[in-house]
Length: 111
Length: 116
Image 1 (cartoon, chains in turn red, purple):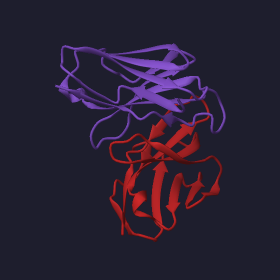
Image 2 (tube, one colour):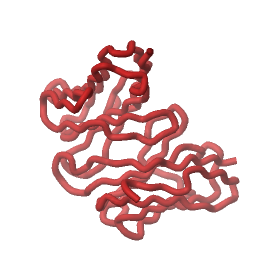
Image 3 (tube, one colour):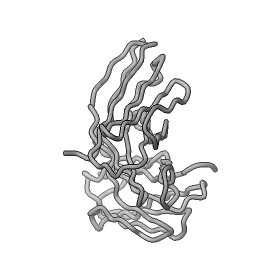
Image 4 (cartoon, one colour):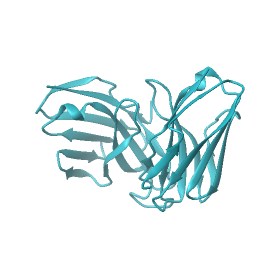
C-alpha cells in the first residue's frame, strides 16, 4: 500500500462546478496535510495546509481532513479553466520535516 | 529576490560534462531539499539538509553530489549523467523542527535538465 494514494484522473468538470479531489494515507502518525497545485512544466505551488479534523476554507478552496478515516480532500468551488492542473496531496509527521507526496490528480475544467 | 530561486532554468549537457545546479532561498528557512520529477512521474525526494547537514540521501546515484554551504544555498553537482537523468529538478525549503506547519515546503521554479 502506498503511503499516499490519489486517483490519477483525469477528473473532468464543467466550468462553474465543484471539483472534489481526494487523498487517502496509511500513516496514522501524519500530522500535517498539504495540497499543492502544479501546472504542466512548472513547480508545485502551495494551495492549502490543514492540521486538524474538519474543514478549512480559503476563498474558493476548502480542505477537509478526517484523521479517523485517514483521508483528506480538496474542494474547488466555481471551478475555472485556470484551475486545470495536477493537484498533489502531501503529508508530514510530527517529527522530521520530510513530506510524503502522492502521485497527483489531473484536473481538467472544461469551458 | 523573493521565495526560492533556482539557476539555471534550463540546462542541456552531454554525458561527459560536469555542471552544477544552484538553489537559493530568501525565506529564512533552515531546511532545504532536492527533488527529481521525470515526465509523468511523481516527485522523488533526493536529498534533505537540515541546518546545513545532510539528513537524508534517498539512494541517489553518486553521479549526483549535493552541497549545502549555508542554510540559504544548496547546490547539486552533476557529472557523467545518463539520458534517463533528464528531468525537472526542484529545490524546496522549509523550517526545520517540530509542530504543525513547520514543515510547509516552498518550491523553486525548477531546472529543466536534458542529458544528451
